[in-house]
Image 1 (cartoon, one colour):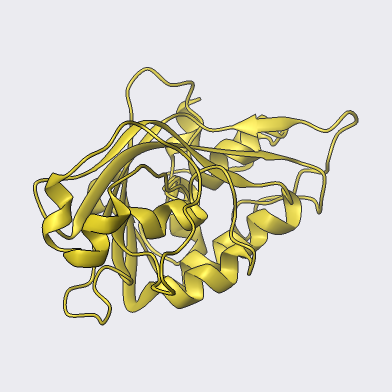
Image 2 (image 1 turned 45 degrees about the vertical axis):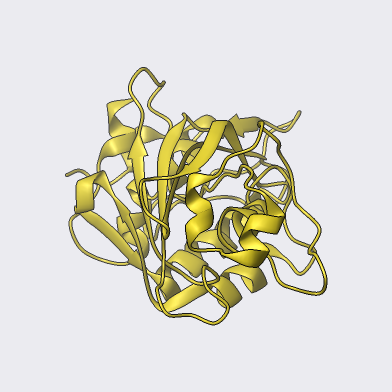
Length: 228
């Protein structure tokens, strides 16, 4: 599925061909540690737990717990787009293919909206643990995005003919991807705004990554994708 990795070097949604980073994941740090010292808490881990965590004492979740609110098998009650609007910084960038493909906040939100229209049950899951990466503001994990094509015909970018839902509907699951989230410094409370997501495809997959991965699994024609 080498065609899944073909992108053109410029554009916004066009860059999303490798934008498999619509995926985040989650894990666990002690809530009490984050309440007391969210910056130092990166060095403290607890046994593996998945799923959202209730806030404590009226305080919002931060850091890893904030990621679990949205990206650990359940989308937030307010909706994915609303959550992204609130928790992605204005200078946010999603980075793919070693930095060759970048999406700003507006482009990232548009790609997300398009996927949700076609895959209403779209969800982020993760494989394995989540951990702070030797930094109080950087988190890493392995993510897998899933969804079933039951909604609108889907095209991963302008100019690519959309593929209509099949009967029975096709369940799609992209290859595992390593995600690194960089939190903005100096926010109040700390660790509540994400300024960057870096997405790296892991070896050994089937060639399904990002919006193009869903397009191909849903029956899209790889010959219709832009050539590099």
